Image (tube, rainbow, N blue to C red):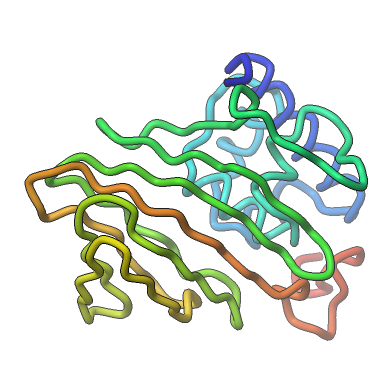
Amino acid sequence: MEDPELITQAIANNVRAQRAHRGLTLDALAARSGVSRGMLVQVEQGRTNPSVSTLTRIASALGVTVARLVEVADVPMVRVVDKADVVAFRQGNGEARLLVGADMPMILELWDWRLAPGEHHDGDAHPAGTREMLTVLEGELTLTVYGKSHVIGKDDAVLFTADRPHRYANRAETELRFVMVVAEPREPHDSRYPLDSQDPREQ
């Protein structure tokens, strides 16, 4: 696993660079992402280790993957990710591992999740058109989308629209492990305002 301090600094550099590239102020990014200006300042200065939810919000607002924000080096044409380089986020007694991600032609992320018995993770609504698909490797997942729950057992798979609040929960007595792909359109914002320009409503 990458050095946590190295990852924190990479996040700081990448968020700052992506925001500058789009000509966004901290206030504008805060408005788009729902992450406070104070938190964004801490992230860009490398003074905090942001959660998965915070990084997801920032990445969606910038139109990039979480993988792009935690990337330590430039991505080559073909990238093989060694298991020692996978970025992991603690989730209570569980763990969310971002295995790999891509930005073109659409935003894609591959995750490996582990949740201990009784634990859950609440996912924010992604931009319109976002889909998630996953398969359970161990245990049993209770997936709740827009208030309706679905039980996905070992070796089962599910595809769902993720542009609404959703929850992954382990209500069983054994550890839950599942692999998930997030597919998000490249244009998460109002199509009248390209990502490289500032929404006039935020000026």
